[in-house]
Image (tube, rainbow, N blue to C red; front, side):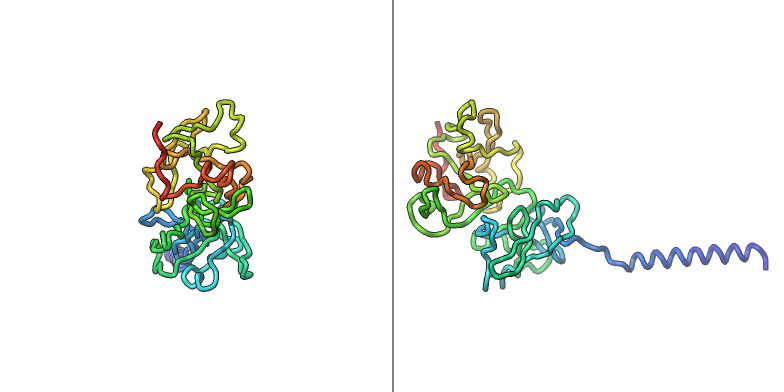
Length: 280
């Protein structure tokens, strides 16, 4: 047999092997992440199985899971012990909690994660604002909304109107569920509390943020937010009210001790029903 025949057969065999390998590669499905990032009409959101949108529940502001019983029929739990993550997500933002019913649930920045049963496909966000309590899970919120019983430093229960009483109230928090407050003596976009030497900042720390506002819940109006410079710090304001933490909350999620200090109404929490801050 001529040498060229051997060469042609060798070339054909090589080509066959390459085609076979490529075919095998194409037959293998791409492995997706347990938690991904999906594009929706509300922007970029966290996604789970099949690219379905994940959600936060405002009543979980303290980091516990308050959707239980029949609630879970509409809002199934998302759980992966050690989820694989899409590029851009950090493993340190995810954790696992054990719910009161004994089941486990994955959290993101301390917020338990859920699906919504009426989301039929990837990209659906029909659970947003359901009951004014559910929010699509986004990786870069600047503020969020918590809902729970307000309990002051005095141990008494309060309602949003600063009176003693029981019932959940809706209020602004940072992305980690830490309560934000306004100071009754402040003026529109003017911090009247913090001393120039910062000697009282530890009592009511300024809520600092970047000058560029990140994501906010769609239930809030982005135009209600702006930033000011207060004693050299960039402070976020809402409806003209400069926003603060309360030092005695000690960074605890959902803690609202400041509502009674030094008396109710001086350091209220805020939400969409709050009045605009008065002008100077």
